[in-house]
Image 1: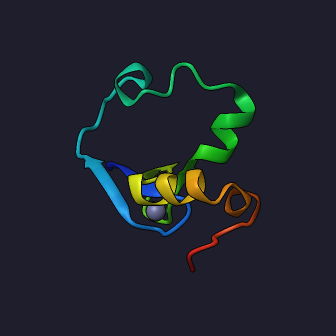
Image 2: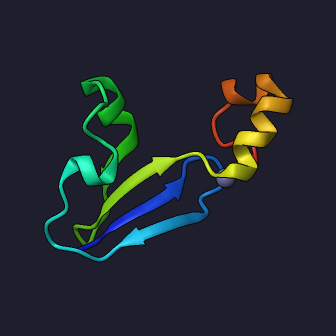
Length: 76
Ligand SMILES: [Zn+2]
């Protein structure tokens, strides 16, 4: 079981943590609201935890084109 950080816009893998027991504080998830957790944290078919963030590239694109953030998967 591992934790994967994936960009929710382009699907690029941002990072991966291969540890059985990682606290939510270590993952940076302890400050999320329940709604944010539902959007950001998911499980894939093999039981890995997927944490959906925005990669630097997409964040830059959204800052330059704020309307893109209103559209799901603008870069796919
Ligand atoms: Zn991205």
